[in-house]
Length: 143
Image 1 (cartoon, rainbow, N blue to C red):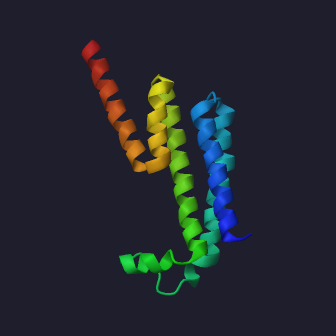
Image 2 (cartoon, rainbow, N blue to C red):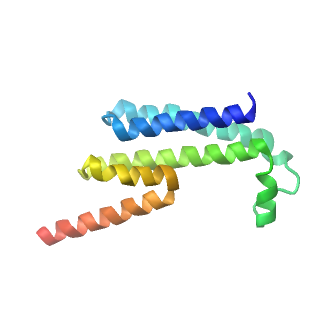
């Protein structure tokens, strides 16, 4: 499969996962499907690309910005990096959704947090932490 096709397929699959996570009821089977089938599939794709292509890149590595740039100049490693983001962000999004439901956060409140996680990963996680801390502080004041 050409790497641009793999890139598009992984992106489309992750987008479907995000839409399901945000819009559908969070049945245990949905969360399990996202985590084990979709995120597991993305993780397997990542692992395959890394094991096959990572050590073929000359002068690439993580020791400097120049080495990272050289590493990501390789299409298969670039796609692996993208799939890494897709898998981790969706996993964190599923964790946030389950935790937010457990804490009884309104789904309307969850949407911007999940959207931020989808678009900007750690920013969404930070928003969830801030929302959780604020929610906990407000609960303490009520008591």
